[in-house]
Each structure stands twice: as structure tokens, then as C-alpha cells.
Amino acid sequence: QVQLVESGGGLVQPGGSLRLSCAASGITFTSYTMNWYSQAPGKERELVARISNTGGSTNYADSVKGRFTISRDNAKKTAYLQMNSLKPEDTAVYYCNAQLFGSRLSYWGQGTQVTVSS
Image: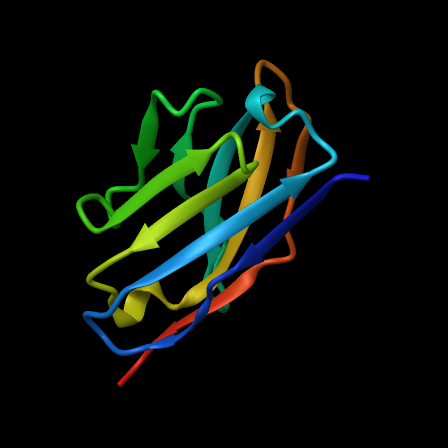
């Protein structure tokens, strides 16, 4: 059974930081590209950051470049999203996604709420 379990969300003041984690089980972790998506109320889910299966390549949405960092620990089967200099517009549910390399097969976590507010 495949599981992606996110953690680390919460309420933070503008300018603050959070680190999201996504622990995977039931998959060969090193065969999957790991993605973080965000979905704000009333908006479509959008890609925030992506890291290749080896960790050698990363991509970011323009809105988070220079503030967010995606990483992964293949030994722990965990992906991370370090979020710095958070803004109110970063408020959203953040979802972890694992996509099998070279395939359309993917899995989703349940999401974790991030709220940036004073």
C-alpha cells in the first residue's frame, strides 16, 4: 500500500519559516520524482517545486524562487520543502506528489495546511 504522509504545516507569521516533510512508503522511492503542490482556497492546485529521483535536479515556481528549497533523503524515503520568508499569499494546503520516472503514474499525500498570517 502506497502512503505519502505530509507533516510540518501550521500557522506562521509573515517572514517566518516552516519545513514540510513527506514520508513515503510502499514505493521504490528512488524511482520517483517528488513534487510539492499548493492549493489556495478557490484556486487550482499548482506546482511549487520538483526534485528529480536522484536529487540532482530541482525546479521551482517563479513565485517561490529564492525562498523555498526542495530536497530529499533517499535513505529515509522522505522529501522536504523548506519555506523561508513566508508571505500571506503562500497560505494554502500543500500536497506531496510522487511521480514514477518516465510514467504518468503518481501518488498524492493528504495535504498539510500552511497559514501565513499576523
